[in-house]
Image 1 (cartoon, rainbow, N blue to C red):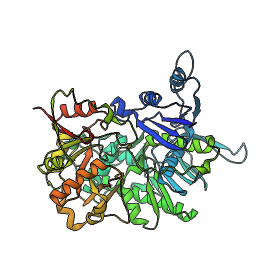
Image 2: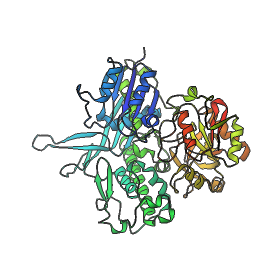
Image 3: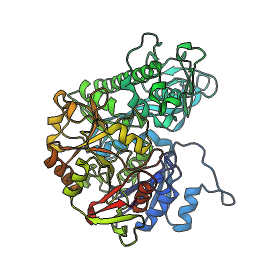
Image 4: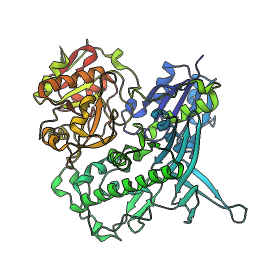
Length: 572
């Protein structure tokens, strides 16, 4: 009988994963169910899991900080919920292994038998770190994991070889060894978050800083953002665990003259300083992250590298690594954010503690990211208020897109991770030079943010510099558009002539492949403009009801449901 492990990440990007005999069977983020972006405490996800599977063990992840205990029983809430449903479920707490969860998610998903894991994160688990051989010389302090390097080997070896901690609690002190680097430092991600906050965005939306960066350039008036690999404390004030703040009083050149959020909708109000700061933080952090990779590879002689942690979602940096290290086998995990730790912890725990013949099981390489509820079974076309339902083919939809209509696509299970990959996508014609402004306005996004492209896998090298990549199915790289193709897809070509791409083959997503192929037949362009099916501030659409609601409260008009062979047109 199968042994089913349910693991949760209770913090931001709360998630639930189900691993059965070492294989990932189900995964969902709490925000998709509650409709609150980055929502934590995945109670609805846990309930969803209990309706679908017999649960043998619950793994509670997180970051190991003190958990709130509920009245009367003194239990933590997740344990209480499980007890009320099935008191026989075993409960295991692994909050002290946040970075290990990131590393193992990437490692198992990669399919490698052995690899170096690089975790670059905002804040991981909160640890006590003891330094010294005797009591009198022992220093004890507490800090957050921020950057970690592991050697991972199938089936269950994860060896920590470098750990960088940071904290702004208590009296500052510094300690370094081969294994530890403990400092009240401003780290790669915290500096990036500090710039993001300076630009008027929440720290967790650092991807917007990445989108702004190509509008800037080197600025000789800026102080060095990093000194000896750490954020310059003349610029950044660390505020662990949340981020950092730019010290404008000590840096008059950076002092805001107006509310930094005003330019988000009014591009004429942005200053060149803001653009240049975004450019510099991207340039510096990708170089430092690359240095970590290089150091780990040189010291350990392992050419398989997996990358996870929040910074792993930086698709500009990921492409930089591919160009800097053409001979390395680099895998960037598509669920690099905290949600993915639930997957990593569940898989590691099964192999390490629950499997007697672990070597008899093949490593569960990620081959599909459509991991949640298959909503095709819950689509009711008999009660569609506000829409006209018409039968259609992929060719019909392609013609609509050619005529410069925005079409939303809803199919099956939603994508895991933050990227829309053809089951919950908004589609448009990439040839429209005015398309970026048009769709940004419809979605309510900031003017500078670029859009992605989904390309037929067999045509990717004809349009993009893939830097040795055979494919990019999870949209984890912003690659260079070939010079002779830049003017052919202006809608998805960013200001620096790059495009974040998803390669698509028919085995990955039959409906989506056929639609792109029909567009190709009509236009000779094997690419569709693709952005997430949501409005600004909303999570990715989960259910059919979410999809209809999104159209009804926006200027979006068409909803394509390929599994049913229909398109919904909103009644005016």
